[in-house]
Image (cartoon, rainbow over all chains, first blue to last red):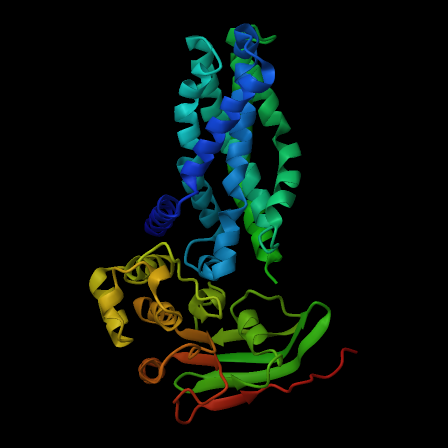
Length: 222
Length: 207
């Protein structure tokens, strides 16, 4: 427990001190959302209807932005050796690193999404629902991305490959997330069923990813 | 306690780096792995730490903790030193100590850095340190957590004469406490009576 806390604190410190880590994701999110009205035109009804989908795609891309360095930074400077042979199992290390990454990069997105949704002329209820679905769904995005990050850990330019590997796997999360978030703004389905499916996806990936990513890390290191 | 390896064969990228190597490293006597570039010194140390798969043979830490792998009882220090530039020297040591189940208190950090003549930079971000100073921060890890086996890959890289002498003293103290040391090096590292394990430049061709 103490070592897990030490690892969490270390990840937080590094994310906070290295510029371009956590804050870059939020700025990227903001820019994606701000650019959308220019592409779609000033039709407020259209923007409000597409709002949940835009926020979700922006969150998906912003989450993937920093994930490729999740293990690669430690691999490059040799501290992954320390993590592999440390006292906690590698699976716990993966889980703690993902948790730290989620709180530093995805949680700010969730917190700021209602503010950015205002720029898309969304009503209060869809804003709240979208923030709730992002809170429930972004853990799944981080965990799926972590598997891709572990698989591409030793590749020099692994970021693009990771995105290609991971984006198809995130489609279920996107479908259920947008379905639940659109429920209040003229969506086809009620809120609860897709929201529960989203929660189930997050829980399943939280349970499975530590083992998959740890196995990938053990084998990818030649 | 001793580290024993038998018939070790290591391949990398389809090329046989080490073939049928047997060795013994008893407690209290350092084992220095020598050989020309490309002879497999780093591969051998990484295999002992558990980072590289071995093709044949095996190794064991006799008298060690049977529940844990050899790597989990070892300090491994390679060319990439694992010092995070965004953290201070002290924070780097505190994290390493927590990870290796050592003592992450500040007096221990100061003592470890003092042994390497570096206590004045404890609150400096590691990215501002010179190559030799970063190396010494990495070496200070050896002192904040107790592990019986030290696997050091050319530990004197970038160190000045005074730091090399300090490192030799630290290694001698470790050996006197009954520790095991396997180091890859091109010199004697200042350890008298250390055994030498010489790796050949061109190992036997793969069958």
